[in-house]
Image: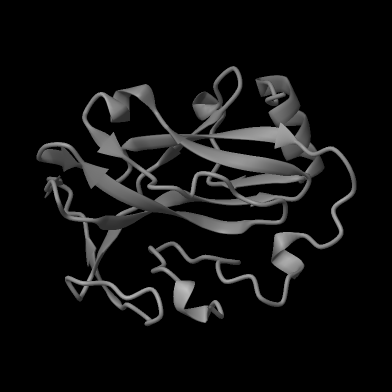
Length: 178
């Protein structure tokens, strides 16, 4: 079951859902629209290694926009900082974004109860497309949780992506033991 707009508003008032900045006009009937932050990143190396800390280089999207290229993997970030203390947040693309051929996540659309931070976007495109800082990029939907949560994500000692900043965060796969 997905939370409706009135339920999302109730949870915002109870502070179990936090969205900063928040604007009521971006609340849909069962989702909240998020926007592209001004910072993008690309990996420095062409070949990535799952056991290595692959570093990224940051750059800002200029006001006149930036053209994303196919076959290039970009990391972006939402303008919005969010906290979700009692629900499972899912980040999905907007239909308008998808119709431009922009994918905003490869696999990481689900957050955890207790996630606090800006969302890193895993961006790829089907053809060249110009993007702009602040453009609508996705939407958050919230699912209730059945049962008690033993340890929320923001309280886990090994939470690799807790308190993400307002810039993209590279893969932390290298911190796993395998």
